[in-house]
Every structure is written in structure tokens, then in C-alpha cells.
Image (cartoon, rainbow, N blue to C red; front, top):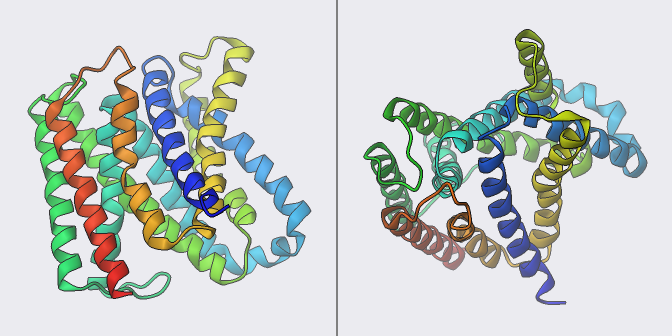
Amino acid sequence: MKLFGPFMVLLFCLSQAFRDVYLGNVFQRVDFLAVILLAFIPSSIFFAAFSVWRTPSDWPRLASQWRTILAMNITTGLAWTSYFFGLASLEPAVVNTLHSGIGPLTVILLALAGFAIAGKSSITRAEAWCHAGTALTLAGLWAIVLCGWSGVASAKGGSLLALSLLVMSGTSITISHLYSKRMHEAGFGSETITAVRYGFIIIGAAIAMAVRGNVSGVAGVGDGFVLGAAAALLIALPLYILQLGVSRTPQLTAHVIRSLGPVFVFALEQLDGRLSLSLPVLAMILLYSAFVIAANITHGWRS
């Protein structure tokens, strides 16, 4: 049973690799707005029902948290929309690395600016050097993509837009998690928070699809059901798996395993015929993982 927690964290990382490679392929033929609706509507309904059954006392108290819920919805919507746009345009391993790497840097910048959404954080000089190394690897990935050395070819203008949106994605999802942490500290369960965090992105995607008037790439109800089930399972279920793993795993071990996530994505995407092997991308991802592991070891040593 000692290995159950680390195994769950590892399973989460593998599921994220499948998610990014699968959706990156799907987005070549399906409008990502349609995937948003197919993924998040079933997830919201499921977790709402689960919450009503497990923690019904949460719902009468939600009105008191409307500002936090609104902020969490907006940042979650911006994060996933930007992330999906990136997957439709760039190599999945690059998308995953940039999205993941921006998070810790966002927390540091918020702390330096004096913003504490859910508690204060501090870092040592050694951690700061490690995070600086992480930032350099992310800048290196930008250069690789813009120079056309990544595993997928795309126009420079489109790549620049996608890269910029990934900065928004990583920043927004980090802030969203901080708001969800605030709700956790107020006593709300994970299932309730999950149930109420996707309303903004669902409404936005529905309005956009209604204005457009068609659902591109979905060939009938059966295809829509398969896409929706796969997207929901690859997005919602892994978050529950991660919660199981983190609660049963030493914090340092969990962070080290998660830092290898982009490596798993890179390995799995080699099975995607539309992508080619990019050694510069692999080198940056390995450097990124090394800096993240070093930062977590340094933080764990201090703690």
C-alpha cells in the first residue's frame, strides 16, 4: 500500500500524456469549442450529482462565495480555451511543458507583487536559481518553436499566438487553483468545486457555437458520445486520481513524479504519425524536468 499513492500520481501523469496526444490529434479534425462542450457538460453534471449525494450541505453556502466562484470560472475558462488552442497548433510535449512550467513562476511573481489569493509563499536563493533555470528552458522552447525545429510544422504567426496563449493558460490555471484552494479552506469539497468551476467556459463555448451555427468535425451522435466520454475521462477523472495520489504520497515525491509529465508526453507523441522527432525539444524538456526536480528537492530540504 506504500506504493499506492506514488502509483496514482504516476497514473495521473500518464493520463495527461494520453490526454494531450489524443486531443492534439482530435483537434486536427474537430472544433475545440465542440470538445469543450462534450467534455465539460458531462463532467459538471456528474460532479454536481456526486456533490449533492456526498456533501449536500455545500450547496446552500455557495452564494457566500460567488466572487471566488466567478473568478475561478473566468480563470478556468481562459486556461482551458487557451490550452486547447495550443494543442490544436503545437507539439503536445511543448504545450504540456509550457503550461506546467508557467504555474510555479506565476506563484512567485504573485508573491513578489504582494498578491496572496490563498496563503503566502517564500523561496530561498537556491530555489530562485532553479526557477530561473526553468524560465530559461521555457524561453528555449519558444525559440525552438519559432525557428521551426519542433515536431510539428506551423506558420510562425500561428505559433507565436499559440505560445502567447499558453502563457495565459498556465497563468490562468494557476490562479484558478489558488481560488479553488480558497474554497477548500472555506470547507467546500472537491466534487462541489469541480461542479461549479466550468460554467463560464460551457456558456462561452455554447454561445460561440450558436453564433457559428455548426459543429465542425463531429460525425453524428455516436461520434459525439465517444469524443465526449473520452475527453471527460481524460480531463475530469485524472484530477480525482491526482487527489488520491497526493493525499497518500510525500509532497516531494509527488512533485518529482509530476515534473516528469512532459517526458511522458514526449515519449507517447512519438506514436502520432503527424509528428516528427525533435531532439531540441527533448533536450529542453529534460533540462526543464531537471530544474523542476532540483527546485523541489531544495524546497523539501528547507521544509
